[in-house]
Image (cartoon, rainbow, N blue to C red; front, side, top):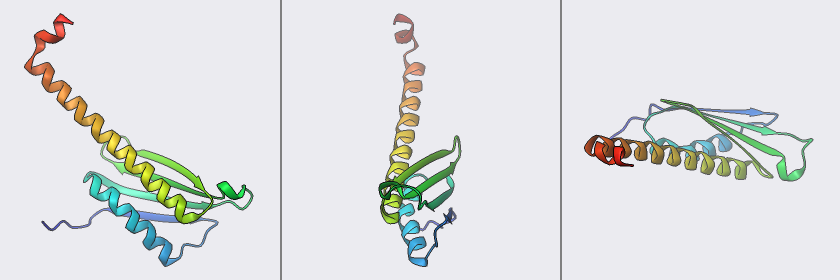
Length: 123
């Protein structure tokens, strides 16, 4: 099955030079999100380096997923840029799987109401 990659990924840096290897790292990590849900329109990743923060919270990664329905946003702080990206992708992946599970639960709950409306009235 051949699927075209028509998803959009935007990577931007604030007080940080985006090297080609860093962009490639973000692209490779975000492919997991695009495989997870076909309805993703766009993912925007903002990487920020704040030199005034402590070393533990120096790098900040913000992720915005534009999807059909409510958009999803997440922010992660770490001591290394690659670590912040990995943590951000993990967090966004958990958010997408939770959203998928909730939609699936609601769908099956609606099917139960249609099949057995008397059960709901008895409760």
